Image (cartoon, rainbow, N blue to C red; front, side):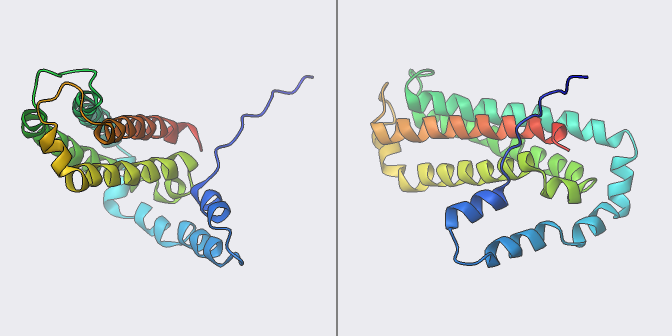
Length: 196
């Protein structure tokens, strides 16, 4: 009987971190492994609220709200990113887009984070070792750092390019980076349920 080909596996953040750091010992890898397999993740799964969500229709409800909030979040961010790149909404000043869209970004982020936490606690021990979950949070951290860099580090450039159709290169790079990172977050999020 012919055998089916095996799917390639994604590297986990612990293996990437270990490879990247090239530590003289496996001390860092061991610490990360201990953290990811700690018994308190099972304790979180055993909270009464975890059982109430995981064993009822609350889970698909939270998942649906999470997907809607994530779509709103990424859609709003993409509008600003595409303006930074110079592909869309070039008639609008950056300050106007930020003022009108950022409240939606933060509102959607709060809802996505709350519903994501509700889903996470139902399977905490398996989520923390899931490579897709690890990549999602790694990319989220990078997207957040890029956002802070854009609004803090490039604030003067944002102001100087407020009404330009084609912002300067650093702003376009930041917008493109943000767009790619958020696409990665969404893709990794979709893979979480498919890597068991």
